[in-house]
Length: 291
Image (cartoon, rainbow, N blue to C red; front, side, top):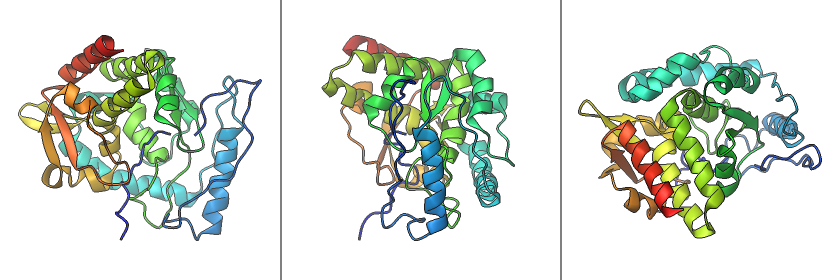
């Protein structure tokens, strides 16, 4: 039997940014046969419509505003009701501070254009729409210029606490707040700048470091294991199980860079940094020394 997909697959949110001279053509969204929305024609049409808005977007245009449905808003509220208690228990101090600063609505799905008004004045980041997954290199290089490629669609309403791919829940709850925190912002930009300079082989290592820090990173805080990774912070299933069901390994940046991951499963191994600032400093030092 095929393994249950990770409720977050951030193999990294479709189509690098384009300019007005090279806008991509709209394309239909393909869903796997085991996707919760595969047999739902209304959901598939909805996904196509949101994908079209992203695929026809060009840098410099107004970011598309999505008129989210009542069902989509209900999913957003249900996710928050489930995640908020886990955040109080597990979220690291830096994420909590950033989350308070950005103050995401628990009742209505925020629009990217509104998020950008909050995050851009701090450290220059902005979220740009994409229709789905892109390669690690396409995703990471955009971070160098302060661009985070973000999906805008919502997971299927039948399983509000699960998604086989990154959706607006993951992008906003997991990532958006981090762009108003200096450590998170600096590390995101460092990943992007290093990827621009790196060989393909080194890009693979950079992608692993990103995965095990900004997606699935853990840090020690006052003697407790806390979460700083967006993949965990936006995943009810994995955030609720990681301490008892995943192997927590000692911090070793070189080892992390050489450790492969499988985005279609819950994580088997996670790395615990001695502290958030240590994680940021040592990863940035590795990027400077190896690229």
